[in-house]
Length: 395
Image (cartoon, rainbow, N blue to C red; front, side):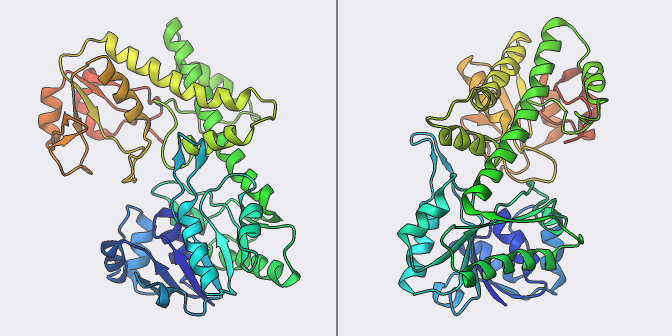
């Protein structure tokens, strides 16, 4: 099979590596630096498995900037372009997807087009009516930052959503994409669900909103325990011994963040327009309330010079877009709390008006309160300065 993948972020590049084990993959991007790195066998993003796969030289994968080359007779076109959440419109910005579909329609593309970008519920059915000549389906991704290829190699499930009016031939092609994903995976007998495209879109948003709910639940438990002088760890252990709850995904933090959970929960809330709900709104609001609480606790310490240790969401990630610590930083700015930042991913000497200290030892010396969302062993010698709610020292 010849597969064109549009976009080489976490989703697009991990899929390109997965599929290029058994197929010819042409990865299209608009950033020349990323294209050059991929063609040199170097990952432009931080992901251990992607780095190893690209360096192996065993993939039938090439990256490029040229649309003529990328769209030359593919069997499948996978769209993995960014769809950031627009706070003004309360909706995902899907313009990058439509830009790709415009070009494919102009080229009279007959390939099966799989949207992998996160989209609103009902989007695929709508866009099929806008581009009636294109064969469009949707397949949600369930990936973690820094573990994108690992999660594609070991998927919990494969979901492909097909619009209601698809022809039999179109349905066969869409189902064939599920087989391609399974072929590239390490796991065997992967649960596979072929469903309607709107149901598939809902699966993605409800799944991530549930994860956001679970983060918010244990954060709110921690807020209560901290406010009442109780031992958070003991309460969580006691609650999670119930097998219906489970002892996982229960480590308090400064809030949920990253690429997916904040925007997906907000998009789902927007999709609930005219539908009765209380819980989804609470999931969104709870995250803001948690950041308010964390910031207030820091303010109460009255630090002479606070230090923000790492902006990235988690170990093994190079992303700090929508990281929860940034929401806390905004509140500290409003309270005029002085702080410096230690973040090896930032090369500049300032970030959003605050000094970036590049030397960790200097950072530890100068800051009398070190704020970290996730603990690492390199902070072991400044335990007395730490402010964190990370109980288990794990993601």
